[in-house]
Length: 168
Image (cartoon, rainbow, N blue to C red; front, side):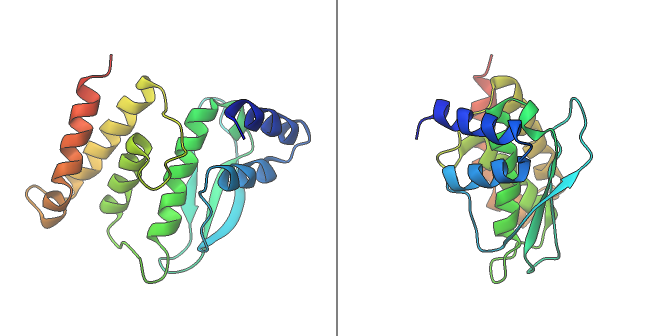
């Protein structure tokens, strides 16, 4: 199915106030489903902020909390933010748990830029890529100067620096 058809489906869901069904449709359409995903829940919407969170204890099924106005935003941005949260769902799965929050966040922002886990996700705008890169750098810095974690992700940090350096 092409991107325009997906948008038509999403509009139909939105017109019928089926926001959670629309979000589930995106998981299916972009191969983001995971056995550790417990479902979606709602949060209060903000007119100019796309805020999603993943909730649940490490090792337990995870719920992704979305605003009811999620589909009022650019679809490429929405897909990237959902991919970020679905990576957290994977990171918190039993047997694959990544305990360090800075590592989880760095990986998730890296994913928003390079789509290694979710290759069907389209690129966000250059504006948003710069924001994702800055957030990745923030979490990289929080790992601790010269730490084992920073060394583990040094190559990915360089990839982000190279990508950001060529953006207009």
